[in-house]
Image (cartoon, rainbow, N blue to C red; front, side, top):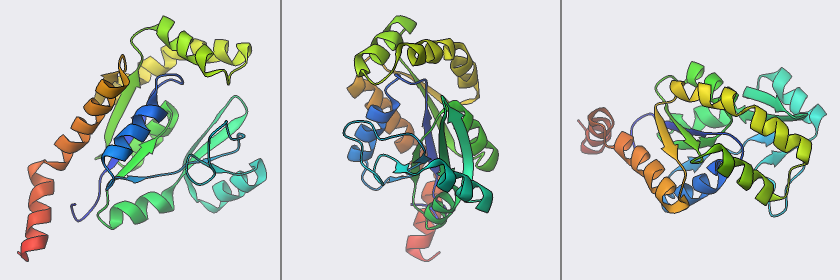
Length: 202
């Protein structure tokens, strides 16, 4: 690890598979820390507080926002999501790489604070496949599905600001590609020399 850790941000439209791919990447790269976001939405089946999200009520979220604890936040379909600035700064300040899973608005805010970060955009192979995945989840109302599909153009327009783009037509392949992006950044000469000089006492 370098003297200062790196942030790796994974974004994409709902249904792109970023949560699943992200979980696979974190399992294969256990030294990669994970930033757990705060949200006001209710947990989905199988989600755990403090693991998938920090589930809080709206008042508690707003209080954190007013205290400056939330670096970036967004409200989607009445639910608020946000990232803790303290968690990011403490983690990378200790030389630990940090993985974040956020929407494109969150990605934009993070780029403003951490322009040196690695920003990965993930998409399904087609709009039809995106719709199929949204319906297959069984967690969305018909109105929400239509709203999410209506945002696809906005989401894709944001992809041009990301450093990498992964097409998720196969989960294992997509996870391997994200891992390769992370590994490649870790092998940059600047990062490797910083680590070597520290370890060798140079």
